[in-house]
Length: 422
Picture 1 (cartoon, rainbow, N blue to C red):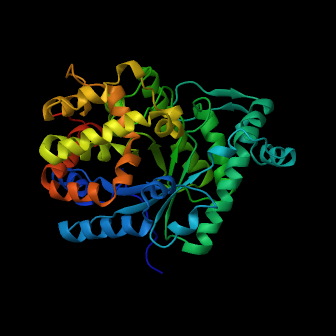
Picture 2 (cartoon, helix red, strand yellow):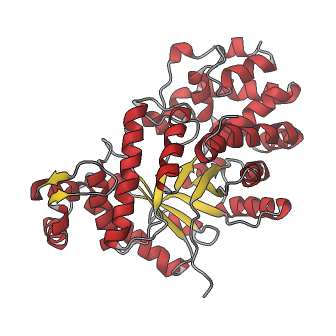
Picture 3 (cartoon, one colour):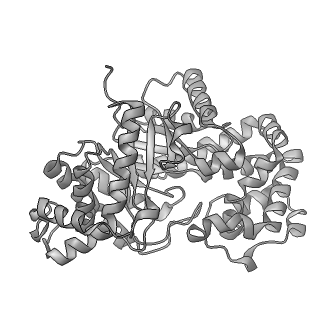
């Protein structure tokens, strides 16, 4: 058997809604490599996005493979079956080698009393004084606390185990990278809660390589972090310590690292992430998705002519169907309807006015985060345009690609992985 797949220290999840920007995205990783850091791309696209667009995971794989061949990329790269469950996983089995196991619906569902009792019996080390190297003060727990955490997360972890074993059966040992997302819950996990979750994951014998916990603050789609940056920094570093401790204590994979979901455009916390991984030597997976789609629209608007006209049309349709488009993302967007420009006004905008409102440059007084968020969830409008949208993309490939590459490298890779804004 060939060597087991292992996710390198630094990776970036790159969404590509319409499978046209793989080369432009990979170009950003090549710039990172030239700057001295290896950041491997993980192309991610969820079942929901495939369903909306009418695409198949195999098309995403084909686009990624073609980009790798065209640009001569010799480092690892992956294709993420984003937020899969037992029902949706079959279509992703053949093309994907990274699986984000989504058990959000089971977080908070009570576990069986006997299973909770058995968990406590297996893990007496979690009760009492829990000292985690790298965290100043030890945690003090009791059986009731550990039981409560297990009751909240154990059923979800057990279901993740079912999905993982199904993947093992269908893909084979060492043939894929597993991630578990625990971010869609009501409150951030403390480091000791994360440790309890990791103990449960180890019990299920899931060879997890990344985990996405819930952090403090709001991670709205496509816009900056909203919350206490200092508190995030503290949580992030303590979570890294909990992971390092769990690796040694429970025999989890040595490359296990944090995954930051909805990580695109969270500029306020990138300095903290870079500082933490630099200090500890840990890795991180920064998951981005819709930011590339927005750069497509920015590129089209910047190109003028038919591209600008199409961008305006996408906004007008998104505005007309905002309730429908926003509903699936209600918990991860924060749009002020009063701040949305009327389509009739947008119709009069120049390329510069449109791109200034949309491009994520908070120093520009014209930047409008409500406008940006509505377009972020408005990719369904472009999907309905079918070939007309794709042909317009292709006709403006150069300017669109430039925006995609610049956005990923300058605004994401540089601050997170290189520690630089210049």
